[in-house]
Length: 145
Image 1 (cartoon, helix red, strand yellow):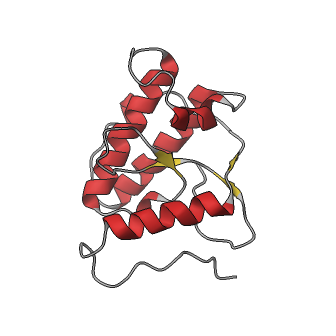
Image 2: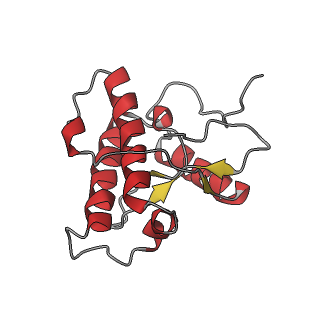
């Protein structure tokens, strides 16, 4: 799984999930390393829900616009499984014990194209959601080469 980590010229990104409490599932681009603990757990839960929807295991969220990004890939289930694998990797790095057995078989997937404007919008939302919950201000990620 490839998450956006900040090359200013890069616009080929893989979708992630946010945890804003507006009652809807949201999928977005930032790497889970930028999420606080509550956000990481919510991201795992939302991504599992997205996987269940793509598998046809739930009646809810079947036409959710945020799933379009995954459904428009050649292999939606492999795409969401690859995403979940990335979330699991970050969770494991932090010492969480998320159950990898819940992830469908991932495979090689192509990055999903996301506009720079969408990324900037999501970064602003993340900064707003985490205001006051982390030490130091979040900085827009830029790859150092």
